[in-house]
Image (tube, rainbow, N blue to C red; front, side, top):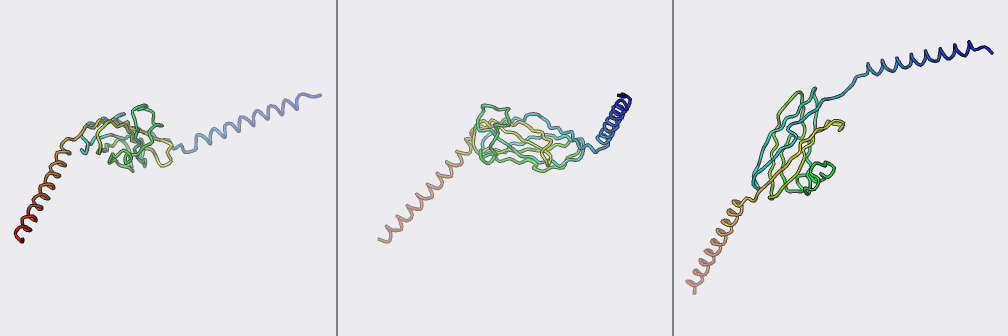
Length: 184
């Protein structure tokens, strides 16, 4: 039995493997790689204010090339797991929070964007703003921490309004009673 044909086949098989490997490697290197560098700062925004007050801050987004990014907000119902994004299941409307952010941005380089929040109720809030590309393969986010205190001015104006309404009603009632007495 001659070993030379077997060795020849084995060497030919190794050469074929190397050629296929180089071909795949070249295809891999030539293929257009579509990655993106994406960043956001600061890591966390703190809001402090009164209920009903509009509070605004700025944040910046960095991309290394032109990118369409889509933003949304998520909120936590309690303070238990503040930095676990999987627990953030509420949207701002469910917690009576009005938010103004750029929901769709075309970004290239570093740009600054505003965020404005208004809370209908006092308390502590935890939220997150998340930006991702269209297919969701890349994303960044900012944690939001807010402490909102009771707006006593809001209740003063409400009480004054009620008192004015009551006094006008009382005055109108007295005038009607006076007119009735004159007609009798």
